[in-house]
Image 1 (cartoon, rainbow, N blue to C red):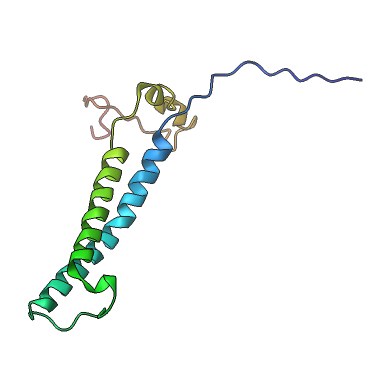
Image 2 (image 1 turned 45 degrees about the vertical axis):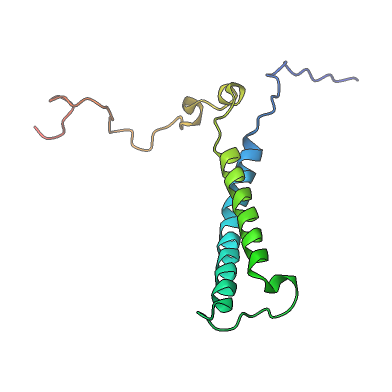
Amino acid sequence: MVVRIRFRIGPRVRRTGTKNQRLALAFGSLLVPVVLGAWVLALWRLASDLRFASDFAITEGIFSHWQVWIAIALALHIVVIFLDRYGTRPQPESAIQASIPVEGMTPAVSAFPEQKFSLSHSEEDSPVK
């Protein structure tokens, strides 16, 4: 005996950029404290060279210069700005059309069947007589 299962043809799968936008916003948000730390280290090293602050923690190597920390902080700051712009750009029309309608997400049975909710208020809807 051969059993055939027939599926009806469903909607076409469309690729949208929303997943990449969410990742861009997430990484941009996670990079903000790193950028702040780089700016703090740059200002600490600069203040240490001007003898406004105590000695800098890194005394040797490439990371012992304030110019390097400013360049790192500036580059990371620009990356955060671009990630934020990419993450908050408007969605394409295909992504909006492919979204689930709000009516499809509402439950079939109301949690409050005895209450009626409306935007307009009239005397007959009022529980107080």
